[in-house]
Length: 161
Image (cartoon, rainbow, N blue to C red; front, side, top):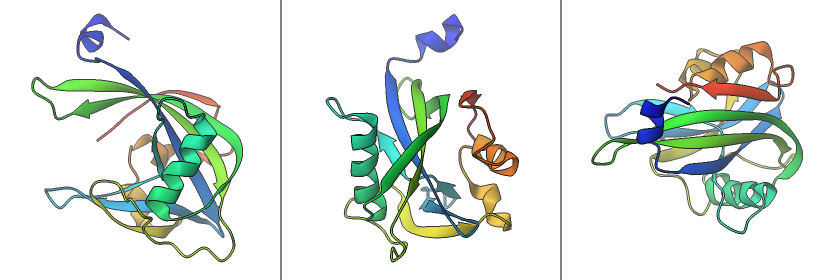
């Protein structure tokens, strides 16, 4: 990371994400920001102090998608510089840990007990649909096309919109 970015990154944060696939469908959260822009995200979020990555993932999935998950394996690790709306503007260096997970066959996509800010609903995204273009950050779109399972474990820097 260069010195300019370091000046605006006051903290690092570990974040966990769940890749949950069923019949060529990916479980995602649909979020709508204040401007009405729609984006789709993988379930997950920041780890809390004292939690393991897997504990964080279980908690986040219960809160956001209302599911008890089974964590299978670590698929990817990536660096992500997330722009924050602070005064002055800052960037958070997020280290993303992406795990292959599953939900029960009876799971119906729905919001959990504590959905993310701007989260409208949870849905199964058909990987052959045009809606894949809404997946955020944009790098996930490319990785999906290359097949999540075949991409390298360390992805390096992923981008944002």
